[in-house]
Image 1 (cartoon, rainbow, N blue to C red):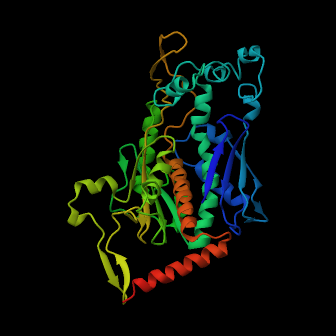
Image 2 (image 1 turned 90 degrees about the horizontal axis):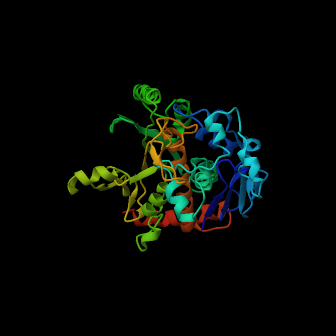
Image 3 (image 1 turned 120 degrees about the vertical axis):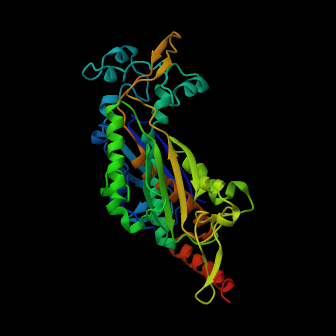
Length: 406
């Protein structure tokens, strides 16, 4: 079983990522993980924070000379801005007088670094978090709820993607389907894993140049209006073998695991597998993927509306996962709220933010899909090394081929 977790706060000294259960022999380097982190910082509509928020990655354990060794993997992603936050985010007690000193240049956003955050922002975890944990202000909530934490998940996802490809030849690609009101047509060609360089070079990670240009215009218009945008992203996993997941237990269904993992990403408000919500408008005769016998007995599907999963089990087609991300909650045109210090009407604090986070959202969803698929693959193949996992998978697939050859 693959287990992972992250620790750390947005403006803390570092984020930490831990992963246990990775077999020995997965080839992975600091450079490859750093490349995944760099993809997360790309995208038109990102704020100034991406310029100075460098990801200082260190591999602390579980990898030797570019290969996993079977022990837990530990990673650290340092915060280049830590000196500015070392007092506010200190793990040890500080002199309260130090928190009364204006930080930075006197800009209200900089001063707010030291002041109690008593004006919860609509759309954030601020208000429910403060009340749930009985905290004096929202700083401890927003620091952990921040999407900055996803950098650790993307780092873990890079390890998972290496495992998937090296054991089973599974490769993933992510792209943007929608930003605001601009949508990639349903019949537009979908990318493959070999299109990664082209997607990373596009300002909005879109496969169609004309749609990409329209998305850029949509973002620029929202920025000028002091507003933010959401959208929809899609992840496609190719060469996923039949048989990952199960129908026998609801918590172990592959689609349920994917949905839970993706819904756990900040700003995600909807998840669908395959055609998902569009299926609800179709009749059954046009909704399901017919099973065909081709090439002397090999089984194929006439379509992939199910997104590669039936009954909680991968069916041999590409696994397709889509996620809908709400507009960023930190809106430049500050929204109405209540000051918890006195109950008076107020405006939610606005600090630096992006116009949209849909583009990095695609990379983050890709990482989460990779983690779930890697867990399901190891559940099926077992093994303490890549070679053992590969042998077990080959034996299983040979039996599948026997069953589907007539």
